[in-house]
Amino acid sequence: MTKKLLLPFALALAGLSSITMPKTYAQMPVSTPAQSPLALEVIATDGAGREKHLPSINGVVPMVMVRPNQTVPITLQFPSDKAGTRVAAMPLDGGSINGNDLVVLPTGRVIFTFKPSAAPGRYRLLVQTPSEQHVLEFYVVDPANPPFKAPRPR
Image (cartoon, rainbow, N blue to C red):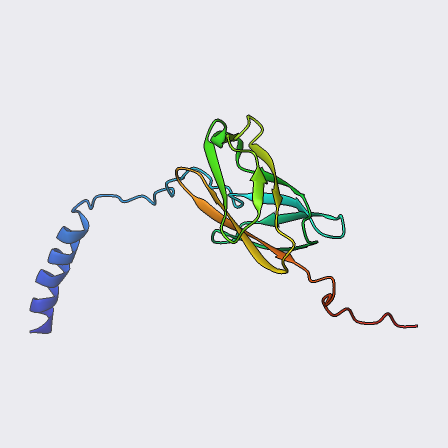
């Protein structure tokens, strides 16, 4: 009895193997245009005269410590494909900027100055293009109460 069942099963299996199955091929991943890992770099001079290169992370640039009434030269470095884009820079907590008609240059740069007031504290500067915005933060140090600095080992 088992021999009678094996023969039809073997024939059915042989018949299935003769059916051609469509071939599938692995596809290459679709490449997307490379996004710049750094959408904006801010170059600003701190209160000690050091040039700081700071990235915008989720639209916020790390804080820069400055002196009261210090004129801070600022360079915004955008990708060069943003050349010609208008940029607005607005102080949110006081201070002033020098440069009203800001446009991204062919090099991707925007250059202007920011001057916070003499009052100690945080000063934010909102930088906007038609498609993005970033907040730059500055902190005016109180000369009477400078930040703690650890003593140097002797």
